[in-house]
Amino acid sequence: MTLENLERVLPDMLEIREPRPRDIDWAAVAREFGTDFPEDYKELAAFYGSIEIDEYVGIASPDPGEEACFARGRRSALYPVECLYEAGMSHGYVPYPQPFGLVPWGGSIDGDEFHWRTNPAGPDAWTIVVAGRNGDWVEFSGTLTEYLAGLISGEVAPDGLPPDFPGRSPSVAVWE
Image (cartoon, rainbow, N blue to C red; front, side):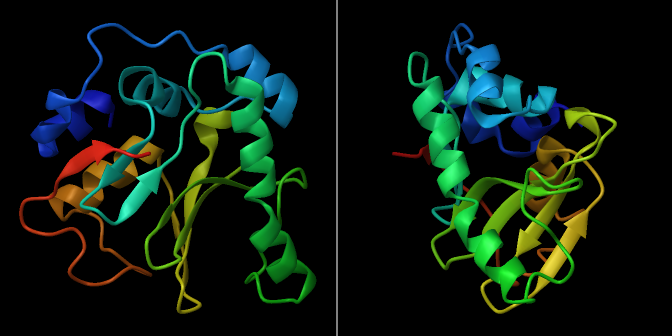
């Protein structure tokens, strides 16, 4: 699935879509963080920036000119995974930069954490891992936009999340 599929199942997104892609220096993000990011995420970030879905899930993205700050923030967001890993509570998942390590992309208001699981084949082969606040760890074999579109359409179960997420008419807003 692509960004267009996400926009199709969540048409309110079009109300906040930028008319032109934001000029994000992805090379600077990759230099600072240590890896590139998936293309579908780059497209989402270019047209939307950081967003919040149904006042529950926030997806972080860099602002133009703040790429290094964003990358440092993502590095800081690795801390909970590092702590869980060191305590033997990460269900076998490891933090980035270890092979197949987790890279955070968002969170929920209830403390659920959302990650990519890296893959040596490259960022477009990364999968989604949800670390639910109740200790549920769920992996989705697909892209970020596939995962989000599937959650919204009901094709992907909200495993690890509240069963009523998303609502019948999910909203989307700029996430501050």
